[in-house]
Length: 93
Image (tube, rainbow, N blue to C red; front, side, top):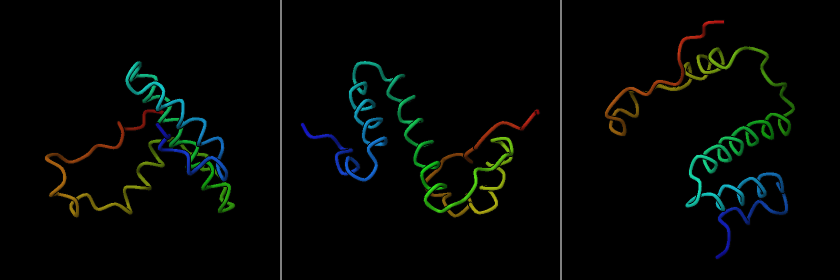
């Protein structure tokens, strides 16, 4: 069976490798799979910052979430959620 991540193999080999490992663990170790997918997401964001020549924010993650929330109107997605999504707990320094 061909990987769902094969399209990344040439241009983004690091994403391809993480994706392959996540797929490998999908049915045998779901926790490891989720950790790898988290790494995949972090790597995507870091690559986006590099390609756009943007320096990574030096603030805490909760502050970054708060900045993102300014651009996301959850009310627009009310039909998709039965609850209001919570991005993170309050930052406690």
